[in-house]
Amino acid sequence: MRMQDEIRELAAHESAEGCAVSFYYQPSTPKDQSHREEAIFIKDLARSALRNAEKNGRNDCARKDLERIAAMAEQLHGNSGRAKAVFSDAAQGVWREFDLPPVLERTGIIVNRRFHLRPLMPALNHEIRLCACSVEVKRARLFVLDGDELREQVDFFNNIPRLSESDGFAGYEAGHKERHHEELMKRHFRQISETLLATFERQGWDVLALGCRDEHWSVLHDVLHPYLKQHLIGRFLPTVLSRESALKTQLMKLLDDWEKQHLDEVKEIVLNDAHRAGKGTVGLRHVLRSLEKGEVQCLLLGDQFQGKGGLCPNCGHIDLKGSGECSICGQQLRAVDELADAVLSAALRQNVEVMFVKDDPQLANVGHIAALLRFRAEQGTMLQAAG
Image 1 (cartoon, rainbow, N blue to C red):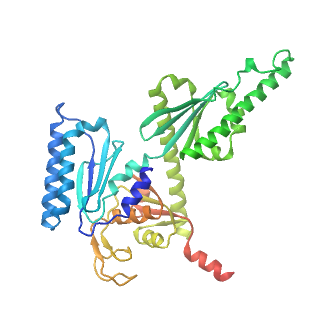
Image 2 (cartoon, rainbow, N blue to C red):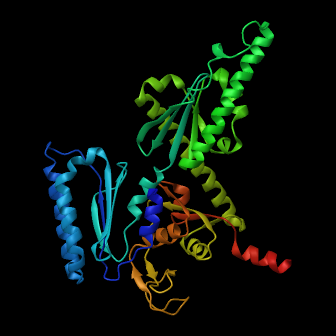
Image 3 (cartoon, rainbow, N blue to C red):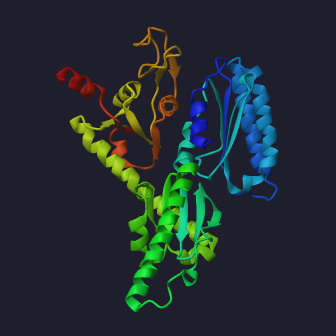
């Protein structure tokens, strides 16, 4: 199961007793090799969280998980430079651990009715899985970049006949020989495309990068399946394959450039269309309304987004007011100090793509929150009425 699918399940979780524990660990450079300071800090956080839980009368259900997290601190030892997130609720048998790229803001522990998911957003931006295929005339190799980990999946297509072993090659005139050579290349690249398509769909990768020589690119691109072209984000140089670190650097730059371009394209559509009732909407009030209507395709959430409000425990309605009756079902709202978690939970439960945006002045101008819409419900109603 992908992390985003697991996070979607966690977003739906609620502890009536308020004992959902969220632990975030961001590795730092210790002043000594024993990592004792790190362990002491996490234990202090666990004790502080337990004291706060006791003040709110929920120490019994949170104690076991907080003690387990404190014990984990002794075993982290920097966690090989990776961040970690733990979500637990002993009363309901929940314990989920995630090793993440070291992109979290800080180490912390939160105990509440729902899991605190906002700190995960930078890590989810790194969850795009890249398939990289190096194509040569006689073979192909497939690599996977998952987060910050690169691994070779398989060295395949070795069963394609070598050109020197092909029947009818020798004895042709130069022109025939060249055309025959090109046809063999096309046949080989077409088989690579078909096999890569089946593997790509089976593994569920998000994007594709291809490595090949310049003189082979036009032939490969011509026979590449349209679905693969749709997911293609760029090319890399096969010469770096002998150095895994160099290949990883090149692929991560390709992915980073594509993510920035994708964000810019989505942001441009959202901000331009928001003012003419198109596929974009901006500001907390409008985004909440679109989420409740099921219109949102992609949520843009700025790193500086803040907001307080209320959440209906009965129907899940998110309100900008922190108390009073729910405008949907009439039940009493529960005050929420951090609306980001409520908004994220609602988005993830609807399978909405979430893009975490850092230091963006355009998004700041609209309240650090915006959304790309699949449709506008009122437009659909008007079209039905017109029909």
